[in-house]
Image (cartoon, rainbow, N blue to C red; front, side):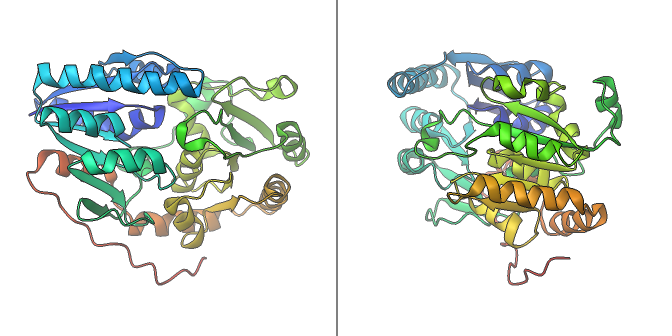
Length: 356
């Protein structure tokens, strides 16, 4: 089988990397196309995944539109030349359009309801669309739900085991108390009009007052006042850091979900609401969402409360429940990409919401 995989974001590298490795080991022909996004390229290099960059970077909404058109045109040309059996991607705007224009089956994965413009343009052209069963929108007959999360494609216990040696190699003590704080640039099309923290320095001061260290990971530059908190590990090691953290607080839904499936309490500070975050909060109690006008101060109060009364066993029990009810997403991806017919998974029964 010849398969094209499109990468738009660093998280997409994580989502597909085990699938790529297993399909390569079975002798399939896997071609990866991506955009020029430094962290995504760094991850592809770190995992030894061969790739080709189809378009450069952009700094404004106008450049974003031009960049998108260039990416789609280049992808169409590549698909016509390669004639693959299937093309797949997350979100999949360019991928689904290119698939339709070249008569290539397109398989789209998404968990992002609020990407309304991209979804509206991509879904009609896609052949199959896969969403977590907690996805809040009904897409129609193309939609196939599964009992998992994107993050369980690479952080399910069958795919990942936290290694304290990774932290020690970066000068950290796994037994030290620390918090990971994530900042976004808010440049993506689906981020327009949304926001997170109002004053990062105040967040850091409040957390450090509890006696923990704070490590910041940011899409852009870290504010000068908190440069001493800059993340001390490489991008491919960040999940080991999250696993040993006492708490995550940040603007990234992906990292909040990653923390949750690792059993680390997550404070998600953003005006963006997502089905998988809501389920992790309402059913499993692993995420706390703050999206109102006082979201920063409310998140700080809850974060300080958790840190001062930290109960490792409680968070572990909540994670165990999640893992009992959810699947290894990579296994699901592999079945869908290598089978002629989509495989359905019955939605998780969410009638019970009691938290231990």
